[in-house]
Image (cartoon, rainbow, N blue to C red):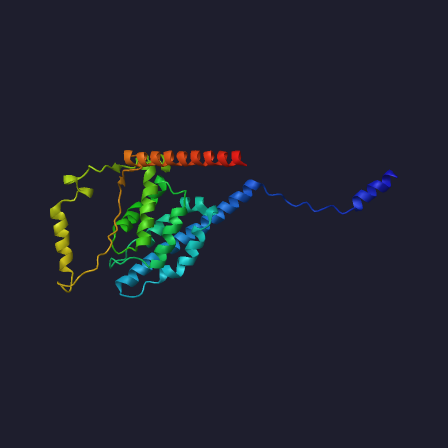
Length: 269
């Protein structure tokens, strides 16, 4: 019986043992693959930027970056490649693509519309990353350039504000914000905004130059402005408080009259 068991064990085919990979080895392989992919893309971005600069000097259409743009955006949108993007300094390629061309023209609008929103979503961008990529000065340029569209300028300002908070130690919470308020007595000669009469007349004279027909009646236009000082609230003044008290007293009297009338009707019935 024992011999039969030994023979059966010998004749029984052994299960092929599969080599087990350690999780750490798998992660290392994936990291190397990601680094190689991002590194190749960075080189391709730099080459495309150089090709477009050369084409711009020769007065030819600069299309190399536009052809590579879908591949670049596919990598930038992957959150799993954030560390590889930092390690291989892919943002340097982004900075190169956003720089003006040799004839001072801005890069294609498609590139701007794709890059600025994705940069705003990259929470891993910190001060050391910005210094290595030298991306900050280019974004500041977009906040000051008059040829930039309003949407891109707004995104550029948001990026500058977000990236500068750690430097100036400003909190991102709205609860910590200090908003200056203007009182009614602020300004020169009691005028709102502190604008002098000479400045008002000068602005009116300047607008008069742009009119085609001097004697024609011009339709008033509303002028919108951006303000950094909030107006002082008037909700707590004495006049409003008095009107509220009068209204409360009036309602109390009406309620008392209604109760008296109800009691009389109940007594009669």
